[in-house]
Length: 257
Image 1 (spheres, rainbow, N blue to C red):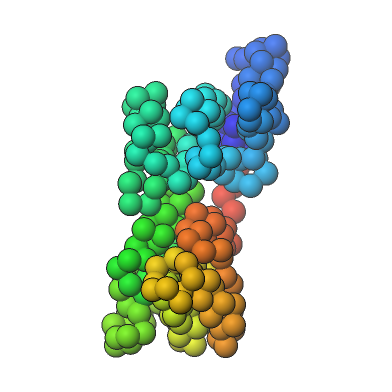
Image 2 (image 1 turned 180 degrees about the vertical axis):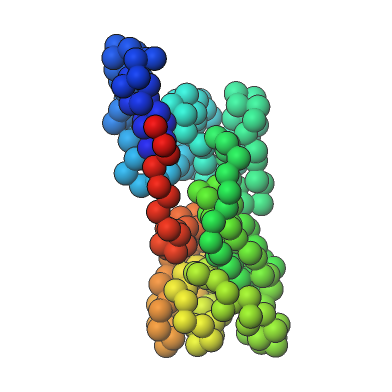
């Protein structure tokens, strides 16, 4: 349940079109619903602006499907991360309107058509980093942000990045995704005055240690204004970028009675 749904319900009670008993039934599972194997946080939309997201790794298809159905039943949008193809097939059988983003390993259901706000720009050092960038992009878009992507502009060919400087300066926040040496966020940080979210990826040869080398490079960036996510954490970056992006939006006035 989000703030708009709750406000509408309260207005209906006030007008008499919905009984107090019906409203209590609607609010019965607020703030959470206990399924035994999961306690679903239906209150999260009210606190954080977006419903609970399902992390699918380690969960069975039945568990994921049950959680997804409950979230949708309460009027929420749905976002599931780290979704393997067999889990996606099970979810789509149960929820035909679900959309599977295979490259990003995400599955989403939009509650309603929305206007995307602001401007997030996502850059990758290489083509191999695109899946993590796509996880960040789709996360931010499902949450309500407008996103641009620029792929394959790593430091091995710096002119590719310098040609896009105008786009970088127009962003409210940038996400920079890089594996191997992980240098790109530090370079971008020296070009712009916007907050940068760096994501190290696990792409690279042996001494990259599954992304650890890129992570350490980013943590030691000499450019200011660079924050670092965990290795391959596109979802976390997309969520954080969305929240920063919305700081540039004026609060919307409440609808008239």
